[in-house]
Every structure is written in structure tokens, then in C-alpha cells.
Image 1 (cartoon, rainbow, N blue to C red):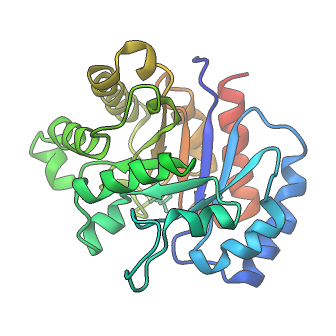
Image 2 (image 1 turned 180 degrees about the horizontal axis):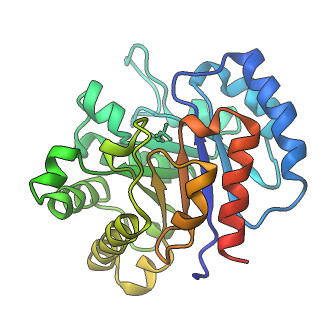
Image 3 (image 1 turned 90 degrees about the vertical axis):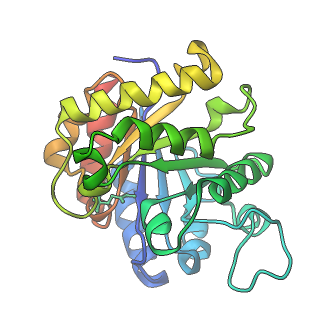
Length: 258
Ligand code: 13P
């Protein structure tokens, strides 16, 4: 058990139009009630953020996330969205460096780092995603890959700003595959991530940083995963698309600190 407050986020990826967003939140928010032992974040696609904001702006429990942002605040960057546009809509969190963006849009650690620092400067909570592919794991490179992504993504982040960052450890081979890391595999990787955070920021600050697990987390495996000492919540894809299954995962996170 840790003293870190869990954080469970719904990464909807490219799913849910505005009406679908309203339908989800109308069903989900009553399940949650007024208090929760876990932070909760809904991360819709950009075009559904305004609709989600109607439900979530200044919500006492549930944050509103974006799936990406550009490091520059504005300017000639066709198709991009900078932090002020997100803040304007009541966005509180931003997912950065997701493996799908690294893979399909060739995002580098240096570019992701610019975004992390811009998010912090704008008062947003960055959720920095890291994780190895199956090929990298099989080649014994899990630690090297995660260390590089953490060092690169968190470069020039001041120690006093670091506790605001959330890390999402998402082994790429577990994303959308139905193949989850075992609780022991997750704990081993999370403990390693925390050791790298300690190298970067010192033990006390590393002990405050929340590390989410992501990759086929579902209601039936969430309890065991969340029970691991260094697992401080989840970044949920497929199972976050239904209010009941997402809520069941939040309950598992809340119980892990009860
Ligand atoms: P799944 O839960 O669908 O495996 O997705 C995980 C993920 O990528 C969350 O960011």
C-alpha cells in the first residue's frame, strides 16, 4: 500500500463523437457519486472535449484530458493544438508520448519533452507514456528503453515540478491485444521506473510520482494489478469505453488504498 492517490484515466483514442460523449458521461457520473478515493480523468478526442467540458469543467473528482498537444502556444502549425486552447476549454491533463503517437507519427523523446515542459508551464498535468515493444522486451532491452524514454521525456523538468507529472507505463505488446502484463511483470517494471525517477529527482520526489499501468487493463485484472505497491492507477483504452467497466476499474483502484 502506498500513500500516493491513485489516478485512473480513460483514453478514448479516436472514439466517441459529441453525442456519444454526452451519453457516456450522463451514465458514468452518477455511478461515481460525489467522492472517490482515486483521481479520475476522461480523455476524449479533441472534437469531443467541448462537450465533455460541459459536464466536467471544475468537477470536484473528474479531470478532463487531451490526447496530445503541440509544444508551442500558437502560430503556423496547421492541424495542431497548443496548451492555451486546452486550458480555455477547462482541460486539466494531457496524455503525451503515447506509443501510438511514437509509432504512427514518429514522435521523438526530444519533441515529447518539449510538450511535457510546455504542459507544466501552462498548469496542465502531463501523463507521459513510456513502454517497450515485444521485440525490445525479448531482446532484454526493457530497462534501457524505459530509461531512455524517461530521461528524454523528463529532461530539464525541475525537481519541484516533477511530482505533478504522471508516468504511464504501457508495454506496447499489451495495448489493445488482450494480453496484459502479469502483476509481477508490472510491479517489476514500475519499480524500475521509480528507480530511474529517483536517479533523476531523488528518492523523496520519486516516491510522490504516480505511475499508471496501461495495456489491456480490465475489471477482472485491475484488482491484482492495482494491488502492486508501485502501481498507482491505470490508463485504460478499450475498457474505458463503457461506463460500467471503467467504473469497475476505478473501484479497484480505490480499494487498493482503502
Ligand atoms: P487498451 O486498454 O485498449 O489496451 O489501451 C491501453 C492504452 O493504450 C491506453 O492509453
